[in-house]
Image (cartoon, rainbow over all chains, first blue to last red):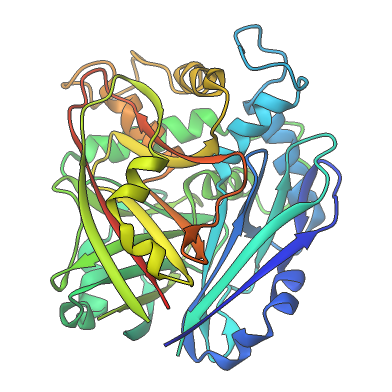
Length: 140
Length: 140
Length: 140
């Protein structure tokens, strides 16, 4: 078994859901050397998140933004943590619901994603800035 | 360290939450050869998901279906992605909330699940069809 | 590649969200021996959960408790599974939304958490009692 790790800085995205599969794959060319393994992508932030979902129709990603904005409202008067703006506490909650890491099997030197699966960066802040990932891949 | 990987096709289930622990364990008999390790189960779809929850009382799984149907409504007029039916976009959202993979420790040749834990296949489509899993187990 | 595993019993916490990063790190000193790897923390229960989120301001954790209590109401008359109290079925649902395991990269003998990230134990029961974790770390 071998293991590789690579820190990646994603440039700032606007608030919303963004496909980053190709950036992840480019950042860790050693995936091609793994016949059987796993690739983990971890985001080192608490107001942006990662998930896997539909990779084809951009309206899916728009509907994600719409849905999570309804499900986690801004300006709830019950929020105690509101110093950093109305988008801050909802961003923490959305990030916890969606998750901060994805784990994808590697088969024959490639991510074993389904046909319609892609990796999403979910940017929950209005001005989130660059986002740091740590990608780790292992196997044999 | 050794690593095993097995593709598994689950036969079509009806919409709802289903226990699949025994199918997973049967599909990867090599788990018995791992003293200390991890088993990942990954679903290669974006409208069905995987989680771990209560394995005894079937009403828990019915309540999961009821709750997520309320939390992620069908026919929201704000959905843009609606060509594939009213259950489609909610299925993508539910899948993202519940997750597309589970990671379970292996101890002494067995999944180290708690007494009341089982693996759920969460089928969010009315007619989802067969579902493909990729199971990867590693350890020593 | 080497792999370590450690069972940990957390003492009972009150309902709410609690930082447990330092307990996890203390329980697995072998993390210091791993240059590149992963640490998984798995909770062997279905009514408490684990996530990673903001580690500084305690009001974030209070807002988590407030939000999830609104998002997953108690005493919904549609619940079928209600023998164990009004907090029981909501606890199962919250646990599924937040997740039962966290996977954190290890770099240079330390968890590669972002500056503001900490591991949360999310106790969803009024009287959850002790909680068992299984921590597994691997790498080289």
